[in-house]
View 1 (spheres, one colour):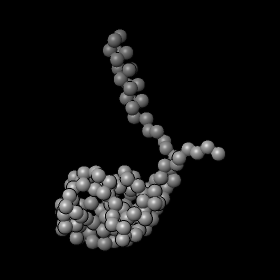
View 2: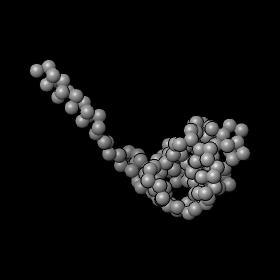
View 3: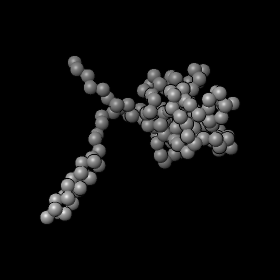
View 4: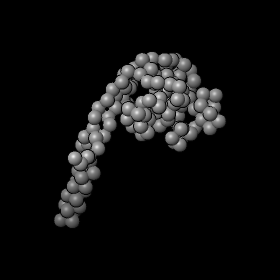
Amino acid sequence: MKVKVLVILCCLLYIGCNKVVEQDCASKSFVVTATAYNSLAYQTNSNPNITAFGDSLKPGLRYIAVSRDLLDSGLVHNTRVKIEGFDSLFTVKDKMNRRWRKRIDIYMGNDVLKAKKWGKKKVNIEYCIKDNDTLL
């Protein structure tokens, strides 16, 4: 009897923990110029493993830097982004120099050859901006 109750409680706990909460959001997409960067001092600054948002970069993680005009379009810190040509999502963890517009920089760890091979491409990006509840 105790085992049966325990199994039922575990099942309920498992189901409760795996519920997906739907969040309303507005989907956005842009065509941007995509380049690649590495966490090396000559490409960033004297502390190449820390982003402009203060996050630590770790090779192997899927991060991007965005031009500051895209920040105004809702592509803010920790936004998840789908980039054309990639299967998984990237996270906004860095921002680029003010001179760039409609541009993302894909983080490629310390692999300079991989970044050079990527080069510069026009790609479509998609992301979701959470709708805010408003009172009229």
